[in-house]
Image (cartoon, rainbow, N blue to C red; front, side, top):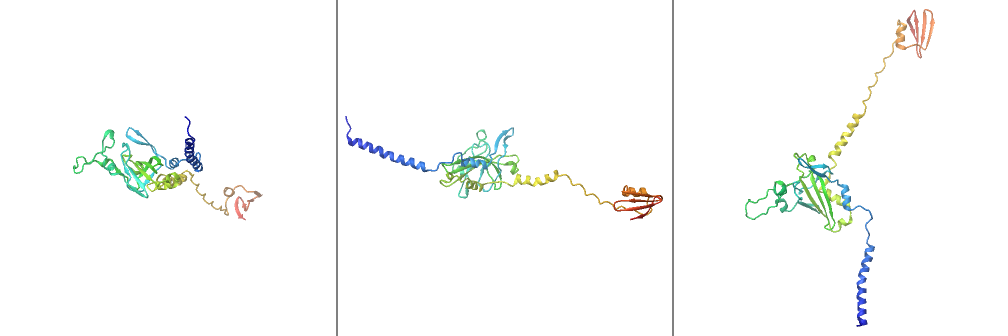
Length: 293
């Protein structure tokens, strides 16, 4: 059966209409700026700024294998959980305000649990304290406490940077060490992370976790001049000024030679002898000084 011409024309029109949006989309994609080939990503640039701590275990439990960048906490509300916990309780930082973790995460953890992990307990209104959770396994970091960056993730889709830290117990002089860990989610405005302005992202992170440049480096710089002084040889003591030579009437020839050395010239006139020096002339009569000029 042959198709009617009108049906064929209608089909051609539909195909043409469908092709127009595709061609427009391709043209728009061609005009969009392509990312520079080989340019570092936002995550790579942040990782270059913050050296991550490397954690491990020994006979005593968790331990730091390699130290990371030391950060000083600038705001309260960062909740630390035991190192054995599967995941920290994330705080949220947005528009200059730090919102502590939600109540279920803070109040629901208690000591013990399977394999030492924190357990979650439910609250029954009016049920008394029988099931009240023990929150001694968590604590908020104080402002000024030092931590290491432990993990960093850039979630462009949700416009946030996830920043995990571990307590720098040696910096805080905590003994025995705790290795508490925490997480802060830095929330940015829509489209902010796509711009890739890493300096502004670092500034925002610094409002909570500021790089601490004071402790070890300052101490080393203070010790360097002292060490340099120790390496320099001690200056030789200044030579004492020479005592002036004194030639007196009646001194013997041997005494004068001992004081002035051998003369440049000697004039022998029998009982009278003259010793000529560079700037001095000594006359001897019968072996004793009779005149000095």
